[in-house]
Amino acid sequence: MVIAAGCLTVGLRGNESPLSGPVAQRTPPSTTAAGSTPAVAGGGAPVVADTSLSASAPAPAPTPTLPAVAARSAPVSLSIPAIDLVVSVSALGLNPDRTVEVPTDFQEPCWFELGPSPGQLGSAVILGHVDSYEGPAVFFRLRSLQTGDEIEVSLADGSVVRFAVTTVATYPKEEFPASQVYASQGYSALQLVTCGGAFDSDARSYLSNVVVYTSLVAITPAD
Image (cartoon, rainbow, N blue to C red; front, top):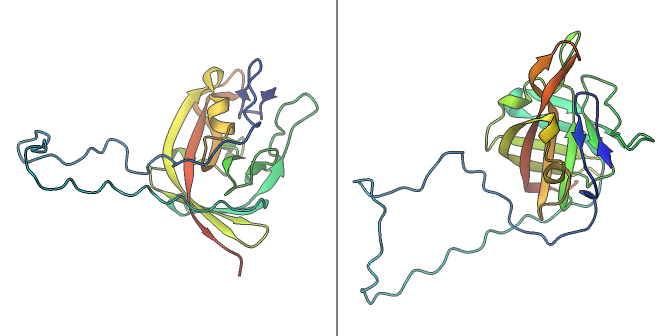
């Protein structure tokens, strides 16, 4: 299967099946800022415990509690406060040639409805354009998001799911990690995809894709 959407080209080669098969829920990646390191003693050397002491070892840290997953429900709006974005969301699927339909509105992102909905176990994917001949499009500022920035998605059933950014990455189109983006990683994730990198003026297309990876942090049920 090939997944492509205009400048949002992402290919699946051979027998890859990123949308098939449930996996057990596991702990999502940390939203600790990239590059941070554990604190060390004043001189900069790591502290080593004195195992000769008779005192009992501290209890291990409790396993993080995973948020409950949401029921399947189509996303209707997307809010990203860090880039002042509040926008409605449509849905798209596959063309007859097994490519992803292109969002028809440059100012409205689209959810890939053949995958999980935001908040379900697995990777939900929302795609949007970065710009058009008229200027910036809906995901123009997506690449400026940082680890820990929050994203809220309102669902058709009235609930709201909240995610936190874990990673922002740019990939050459020929190296797009389709399975990593579309396949379940064992937790509730939302990936936002747009174009990025250098612009090929002859092909009138960007040479890379920007992917914002997030993990679920909270669910607000419908009233």
